[in-house]
Amino acid sequence: MANGLGSFGNEGSIARTTKRAPMLLRVMVIFFMALCGLYTCFICIKQFAVPLIEVLPVNVQVVERPCELIYVEPSEKIYLHFPKPTTFSRAECACNPVRYFAILSTQRSGSGWFETLLNSHVNITSNGEIFSVKPRRSNVSTIFATLDQVYNLDMLTSASKNECTAAVGLKWMVNQGLMQHHEEISEYFRNKGVSVIFLFRRNLLRRMISILANTYDHDVKPLNGTHKSHVHSTHEAEVLARYKPTINTTTLIHDLNQVDQLIIKSLQYFNSTRHIIVYYEDVVKNHTKLVDIQDFLKVPHQKLSSRQVKIHKGHLSSQIENWDDVKNALQGTQYESFLLQDY
Image (cartoon, rainbow, N blue to C red; front, top):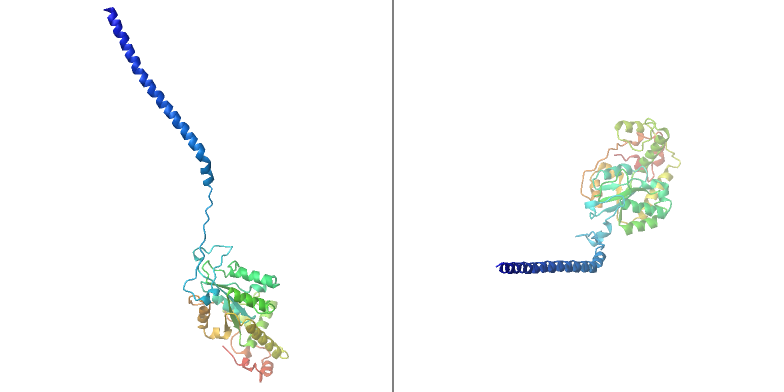
């Protein structure tokens, strides 16, 4: 009986041992498969790691689309530009075309007043008499470099507008290097599509009075010791108008003729440019002339204004100390009409 029981116990032990064996085998198989999987992943990563690193550093270049002129006459394209200033970004106005212009004039011909009128337009920038600074006009190269700075919108002055400027230019006196280098400058204007505004004064005698009075003001400074070429109040204008210059009648005809010839030459030298001729007297008497200027610059019409106050008004007999001598000197000459013109 005992042996029978013992035999039964041994069989149970064998059965338990047999059940453990498949379980251990399965664990080993799973462990081996996991190990093979890790090894395979390691090999794959090692093989593909280098190509991935080489592919990642790719430089992507963004190509900027050039601005296009749509519905523009071919003859007009030379006058439309897309400057890229280095001092600021034109932002959303980068593809708004800009026109270039230059006001060619003589001293005391109303150019300062005229320029303030233009600068009252939100889309016009006229940078003033920049060639009054002699180093800028020392030679053709410095002249061109200065013009490039102006037309690239990098000439920052009190007149500089925002990035949406539609017309940019300057005021240039004909005796500031313009006539000496007229051939090169005229060619520059044509090649760059610069439009020229000639601004002159018909009555050269009134211009002479303004020059003499301005020289006196520069030396004496009756306005609290300050020289002012232009004034912004009636009181200041009245103070400056009290001075009556004495004109040299001996050289008067010669002096007037000299200025006359200078104007004629400037018109001849720059006749090949796109231009318009404006006279100070016409703008004073008829403000519709300002509409013509805006049309010439192809900018939207706006009402233009200036804070400047006219200094010399009325008949010339009240503005010249030796009026009788001047009248006698001009009567019977080509300049006799200057004695009568008023506005």
